[in-house]
Length: 108
Length: 283
Image (cartoon, rainbow over all chains, first blue to last red; front, side, top):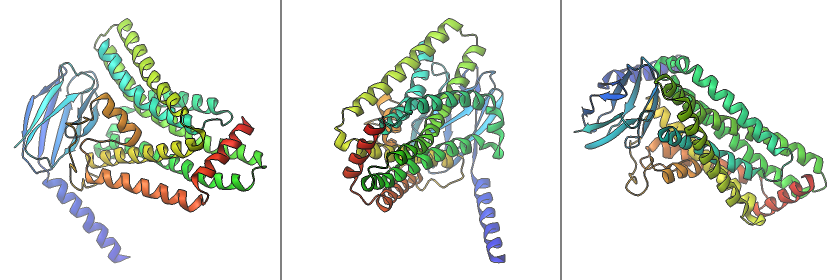
């Protein structure tokens, strides 16, 4: 039992350490547009993408190319874990505002 | 208006494909229409509730509530489809033995039906809540009611039409193979839903990706295209799946096939024939 407890504690500590190691990058949605439109991130590294929606309408942060989707409610912030990705550029978009909300993740 | 129609179409399409497979799988079962209709109604009510409480859901579990919720809904649907598929294979064997016990068959049919009702409700809830949030945003940013109404109507009609097309297409499968075919479709549907659930859990950093992109077939068929999206629902197609998604997919296929083999020792064809006979006599 004690060993089990210690094991669980160790596992939790490892997860926490991993989460702390993940570099963080920020994206802002304003007027249904992404800022920045091009975001540079390192290759072969898992990253934590923090997406803030400053509009008063909901958005959906989505990418087919790095396979993520998450709704971002008005005036709120979400985190999305991405990668590790190989070098290249990966498009993302706002599914609810596809005519204006477009951006690219530049992985290098 | 076109933007509204397109988004609504994509969401309705996904739910409609699930509903049409469920309808085909329950072909000839009594009171099926009421169950499917009830599932859709519950799903729409659920979609509005989920949209209303989207903020609460998003804030749960330190920011990964949305992923947990989606994965939970998807895995619940997987469990119920699995239950139905395995249960029916067992039921097929019982039927083959005691063809005269029609009363039992009717009960069995409706018991399994309530599982599939829930599958329909969950599919509509998941896709519908996105539509509700999207329309709310459109309304809040001043899009006219007329344009939104037309877009919504076009999208719904388009999505439902494709669902009907799939349903009537499936009905053309010869009766001899019909329930083997729909059972197979249900297995692939469940495996695909499980793979999507895995994607959400990886996105939330709750599960390791086990290699982020096993392959990339987006040059052939992208996730964003309508055919890609259709295959995504039907067989769980993904142009850039992670290892964890593949693992979930393979595990569900293996589990369901093993379950069907374990409980249904009658060759699928004989079981299918038995089901058809009972369905005829109870309809």
